Length: 270
Ligand code: OAD
Image 1 (tube, rainbow, N blue to C red):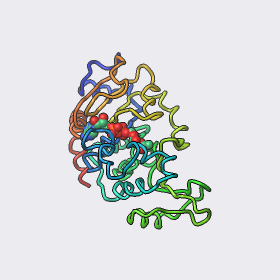
Image 2: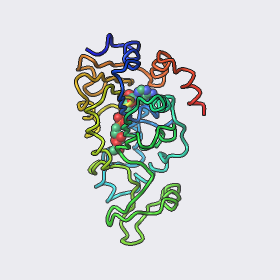
Image 3: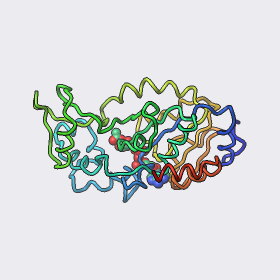
Image 4: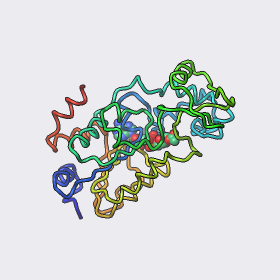
């Protein structure tokens, strides 16, 4: 076993050793709830329990490509609420930035489309937005790119956008159920074989292929789950650590042990 114990002290001792060079991070909606963005599956507060008003056949339909092609209005209604710009990164996003500042971060894989990793200052080349983002948009029929400013204006009015060329529906490049993940995701996944440490934060690990990334790190790579609840297969390997609670509280503890406490608060306040 690589870790002495299954606690923060042991993780940090390992992080400070020369064996730990490549740290990978997997993020989900739970890292952004403290920023005021709901997650998907937490009963009561999660997005999927609050979609009655959209009259969907089932909650995930709002992000299903076939359903969107028939009825895009629910998605456009939601897009307006989720549109990036109004939210500030959390302490956990800043912790990921510090991993990069300390030359430990190899790659941050995120399922989130809120772009808060970039806004926290995680270098762009270290981020893989596995489920895409609102940065670009294309016609779902002829695939032509659509103007960003026009898209933003339409989303603000919860208005359906159609392609000027073929009349097809325009959709932000966020990955819907039934769509392939971005090429960058496929290209970057093999790097996980060289991981020395994996943090899995704020995700229920229910959506594939993303959830399967946890199985790709080598046997000697400790996997640390930081989440409100248990998730996926983390806990099944000897070097797995499960830290249950609010991620901001737990990363604060880790930062404290690393001697990064002041730096973390300072960077976050920026
Ligand atoms: P989920 O809503 O499925 O899971 C969020 C997890 O974060 C849950 O396990 C929560 O308990 C936990 N959580 C919430 N707040 C937390 C906090 N402050 N600290 C620690 N943990 C917290 O969200 P994801 O796993 O991200 O995909 O969902 C995966 C994908 O499903 C999303 O990317 C989206 C969705 O459908 C697409 O739309 C394609």
